[in-house]
Length: 246
Image (cartoon, rainbow, N blue to C red; front, side, top):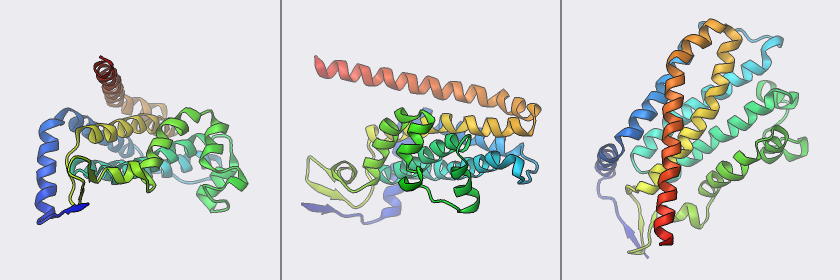
């Protein structure tokens, strides 16, 4: 097995970004809209004081903000062809989504986030991600999104296969553009962005109905555009499957 060397990594990354931009301007524009949607929501938060009456909302704000940072960083990696590094960041967002759901009724989860009283994950305390998914009725997320992201995150044939060229048996030290992997990252990004945006909306609602209404004036359209993109991607997958059968 040979190693495909990278004489100028920065130059190659720049080339990959140009190729990605030329082929996926629709996805890039939509990801930009998503980032702006979150920024618009954050900008509506003038001040927020943590009290015993808003512990769940405080946990949500922390988790949404952390997810926003992960999504923002994932975009940069996706554009440069580092798909195997982008998906683990999006996996963090999936974990945050599950935890956001669990904060609503499970005080242990809130205590883990705000006071470090418990650890996540910890199966002995009922705080493994599978236990959280079961408790909150989100096993579909755990069994589909989270399982897929975990297989990319952990060392194995799938994750390590991303850096191998099956046709030449070389290992790519530098990133290489791959349409399927880029769209896979986009799907994970958009699905998580939609799910986490619900908690940003609930947080703004806690502040005031006026704020969440103001945010929704633009956020609703962005969410619809994302949902439409995801639906069209499923149709493309179905078409490719049908071609393969024929």
